[in-house]
Image (cartoon, rainbow, N blue to C red; front, side, top):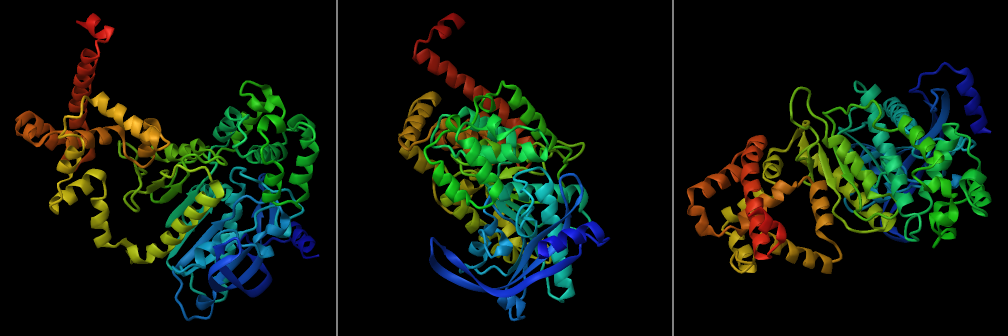
Length: 555
């Protein structure tokens, strides 16, 4: 059996970690569509290989993956733009391995009308393909990241051996658990392969970046039947095995799920869809033992400490030259958005050494900074909505890179557009073109006399409630997109201040300081006193109008 031979070769060979062996090679067809309805097809040439990597303890392990080449690139009729290093999402059924012929989203990305001209490199990861006799390492620290890196290096050697172009660009991507693995891949690259690998962008969607933050969310919603109940058991099972914690299935799961999960998670015969169908309507309280659903239990503390040891943030200082696109649904009921937000927080808090400048400033505008975000879709459907949005955005990214860049530099025409792509920048651009944004807003708010600051907030809250959201969620979405509260207040003041008041020299000077300075630090330092004064006056007026006791006491 080939798998057994590969395992034996790991034990005996002194091969380079870049070496590979071709398992299978054939032409195939990838389709763009949904539930059997194919809208677009593309012929591909797929080469399945085995290669050496390392397990979570640093021991050599033989893994497999594929190199999928669009046929027009393979036969030389179309130039190659680059490589997409793709990390597949959650799987349980061994027959769903990429080298078993199962394309898990990458077909959607390449086989569409945009036709990105990229070679796809994808690892099966441990537990699938030639290593299917070994349990998988679902969301387990660096392990899959190392597997993905080693697959890339082996694939590069394969392409070199065949004198095939690898193009200019290298994109690292994945959704859901694949998003976690893409981030892990970037981390491994930053820590060990900076001289060998440079990603043009890491594109990660719906990722459970912070395992314990995800677990905390699941525990807080343990009685909610709308919450996906498969992720936490999978995480618990993998961390229990690979970190040698020693919990039994009886300790982790209530009957009959102690038996069911042992079969589901160990046999490799069940798809995630089949297991989720079996669990439909069940809550975590019905499935898991109570001690694993308490943030004050000994079991939770053990899991927390283990997760900390394998955390992706541990000892990682990101390479500031790298770029990210990070996406998450705001109300994701499978992978909590709070876990994804921890990644935004992790990146955006870094500073260049000795300065206050942040290399990963959040922005929803592509290429404006090194951290593009999209946390604006208030939807629950992790797979149907989130997955499709992710793959469309990934396809757009792959297609846009050859257009936005030439000779490694951002297209100057696009760069000029990006420079002005802020809310205030867009407002000023519209006004420069003759559109009176301020006048339009003031007409909608009765000429700027729609009440106090707090009256306006109350009206906004009521409108948002009618739309199924609230101010807190909108402010969070704004923050995720790189728009801070001070920015929102500046926009509010600019749009609601009557034009005649700008004749006041002090107000005009304050507005000029806020809106026309190009240096962000200077702008904020000038803005904050004015904003504070505005807020205090609004609060004072509101308290007085409403005869609040604290106002009387203050007088």
